[in-house]
Structure formats: C-alpha cells, structure tokens
Length: 247
Image (tube, rainbow, N blue to C red; front, side, top):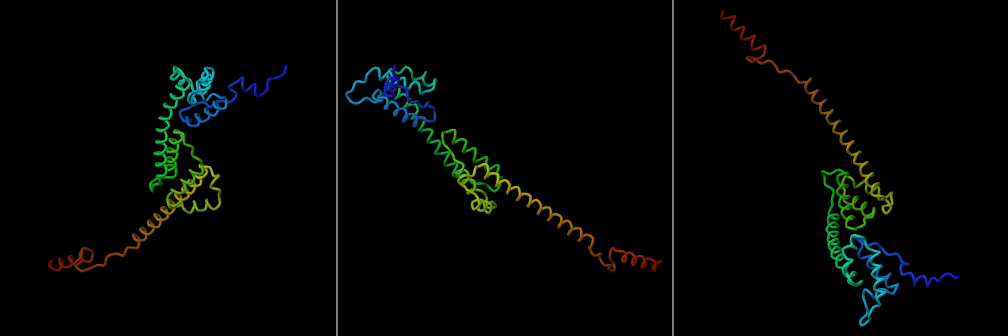
C-alpha cells in the first residue's frame, strides 16, 4: 500500500496550516493570517461569498471549525451561537476592531507622553529612569514594542546638561545601536555618583577653610586702646584719684 501523496494529504486534512491564537492585542495580524489560511484551503468563500454563489455546506462548517480552533475559550463561549461562519467572523471583527481603535488612541497618548519626558533639575537618574520605564510599561501593555536603542537615545537626549560630556564620550566610543538600556543607565549613575562625591568633598573643604578663617580672626583680634574717662582701667584710676584729692 502506497502512502498518500502530499496533495492528497492536503486535500483530506484542512488543518495542515497552523492557526494563530487570537488575543486582545493581535486582531489585525490574526485576521490577515486566518484569511490567508482559509483562502489556501478554498474556504474563504464561506466568509466572503462571491456574488450569486451558494457556498457548499461542508465548506461553511470547515471555515467555522478553522475559526473555532484559533480563538480562546472565553471568546468562543460568547460567539458560538452565531449560525454561520460569516456571522461568526463579523462578530469577532466588530468586537476587536472597536477595541483596537481604543488601543491605538491610547498608544498615541502614551507616545506623546514619552516624547515630552525631560529630566528635571531636582531628579536623580534613578527617578528619571523610573518615569521612562513606567511610560514604556504602559505602552507595552497596550501592545507597543520598544527597542533598547530608542530608550537609550531618549535617555541620553533628555538628561541634564551636567551629563552632556559623558554622553558625548559614550557616543564616540560605543555602538549606540547595540547598547542595552541597563548599560546606559549604569554609565549615567556611576557618573552621577562621582559628581555627588566631588560636590560633597568641595563643600567639606570650603567648610574647613571657613572654620580656619574664623578661628584666625578670633585669636588675632586687637585689644581696644585706653581712653581718658573711659570704662577701662584708666578711667577707673582717674576717678579714684579725684576722690582721693577731695578727701
């Protein structure tokens, strides 16, 4: 007995192409792939029948089965009562296209927030990076993909002026396209620590110089000269002399 040819296997088994599982974030990709798979199996007519063509009942059932195997159980329970594969398809489209529009609008807002980020004078590198990663996390939850190169560029382009020399040095010596975001953060934090230590050392030196200056001024202060009739010892002696002569 000879094995069936690949063309016979393809004809007998409509599930030779693996269907993508539908999620809340991939409807556009899912619908494109599903249309291509069903079209390859001659089943797309069950979804979009040509004018005046009556679609075979078996094809409609196969198209429905294709869709069933590519959606999660919670969605299947909500739309399984649709009578035809076209009604089923249109129901999914109505459900996810609306959600997709909301998602795209949210992504536009998050992108604007990301582009507007600038490091403030009162912020540390850790605090500023926290704002960047928080925005990116929201974008990723909405389906966006952020590459390290984009994050590194954003960080280096928006830090305070005191980091500019370091950034220029890194750009000359490193491959910015392949630098991990964590590595860029590490460079800036190390430089920030050196600046902080240098500032603390300068402040300590200034305080020591001020203390020495104040101590020198106190020890070398000239005494007040004696004046006639004053409150010093000379004044008291004169008063004592006048009292003695009256006695």
